[in-house]
Length: 466
Ligand code: URP
Ligand code: ZN
Ligand code: ZN
Image 1 (cartoon, rainbow, N blue to C red):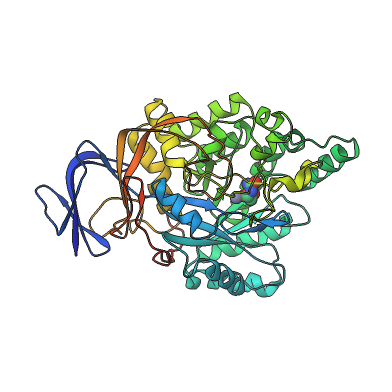
Image 2: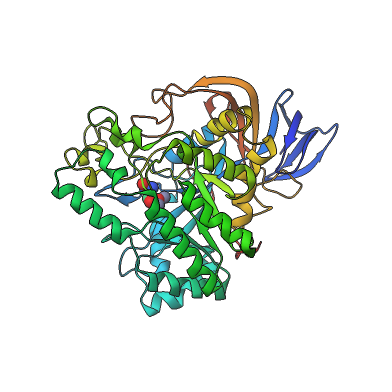
């Protein structure tokens, strides 16, 4: 069974050119002219890009007294509708569990549900010597990145000794260390002070997590990684100070060791969104929080200049009005106490179109850089390139036919993400996926779902090498 995508303009991280793409089975067989196959997809007037890869997601994740509202089917369907055909989720180690047990729990969540391909990072919360020793087996488990939280004291946070030991082990075994960089000890004090003072509205979430505490933790993680000799990837960078810590490490010769990601939403929202009337601001509660307009500008500059290498989503949706009609509890858990609002926002469906609109059409970065930030760099940094993240013979046929002229107004009423709001409500985007293929199978065509639960596969990733 073969498919040819005909007459489109292929866009990779490095090139833009006219050609047909012949898919045989699950892989791209040939890229060339005058190709034919059993089925033809007309891509004239459209771009043909690699499927988006979102390396920062939290599907079906127990967190903040509830569980994120998208599971491995609803989240995958939403991803596909947005042109994303692979993601890497965080398997969070329950205290006392081995890494194998942790991964088995997350495989159990995905098995039979997955509709796009996926991988796992393992998030270490508990590092006795036995788990320290188990780290070296992660590549055999198909997992080559470890995440550690420097925040969420009393829940996910680890101390510097744990972080440093994990870095040493990662350095020895070719794993990439990822950090959520905020100073959890200082934040804990500020949160308790705010509560004691009766400052309980959603906006205090942002006010108790100032940007300096993200910049400090980012710098600390970088210095620890430099001493340990491990590669480091800082997730969800939100502000100029944290970004500059990464930029300056890379400038002093660490550009093959220190990497950073930001997330789509940090370009668009500020801490003022958390001060919207009533409890509305809870929709924008995530960590680290939204910052200032000057930080947004710094982030746009950073992704264009390669100070940051990836844009992901940190997709971690919760219902705004949860806990009824079969919904898991959501943001309402924090009415009357901002510290109890589940942290996280939806976005896996929105990323590619919002960034195409504001990034490419907005003149902030090129078409090729959009592909590099959203598809190619994620695959390279996380050990699955060139199987994923490019259009080339031998690559998996995860391909998106992108219509640069189609428009849509984003609204929760039409989204596929399983939540009752959308951060970008009312935003008009131009540039949408018209056909989305995963390993040669059509998942979405002209707005219609054609995918299948259980067809998505776990992607075993290679050790870090750049
Ligand atoms: O608020 C967020 N970001 N929730 C998900 C967990 C994390 O910190 O990435
Ligand atoms: Zn985080
Ligand atoms: Zn996250």
